Amino acid sequence: MKRELHFTIDAEGNVTLKVVGSAGSRCLTDTEAMERAIGEVSERQLTGDFYRSINVISRNEIKTREC
Image (cartoon, rainbow, N blue to C red; front, side, top):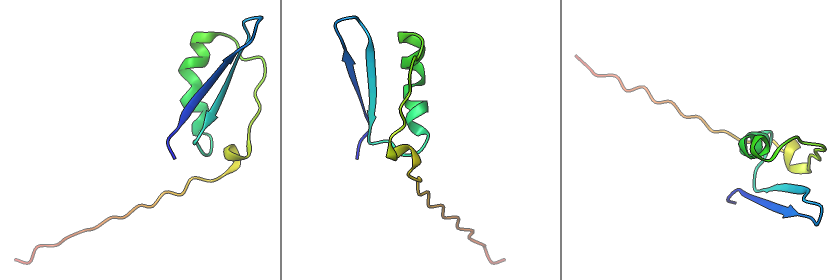
């Protein structure tokens, strides 16, 4: 699933930002620059996706050369 940022601006000018398609604390990194540009964060609600782990698969291959 691709990551998306959804913005809502109400009549008083309050901005709500929702992250879709991001697991773990990555959502905080995804919104960091935007939060600085918009202003002070007055409230943060973490969804279930924040607590979902990110699976990382690492594969290392070492090839040897015979002399």
